[in-house]
Length: 99
Image (cartoon, rainbow, N blue to C red; front, side, top):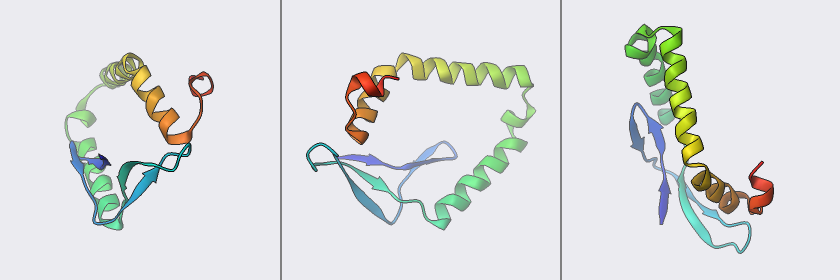
């Protein structure tokens, strides 16, 4: 079964608590989603603050924009994967979720 963890400081991090994500179409379990506790939130905030003092914070605005455009290009290349995930999560048909 697919496990959905948090992404904190470059790593996928599980939690002590999780819940079954069910398909809105038939109620079948499609993933196990890990809930964020105060500990995971604190870790994520600390990692974000540290990033501002690391390489990301040292980049020029243009360099950061180039990196973000590269992320957007990666999302565009994987559009069909994101579309499939959205349809599974919400039960929307592709024609509606595509927009």
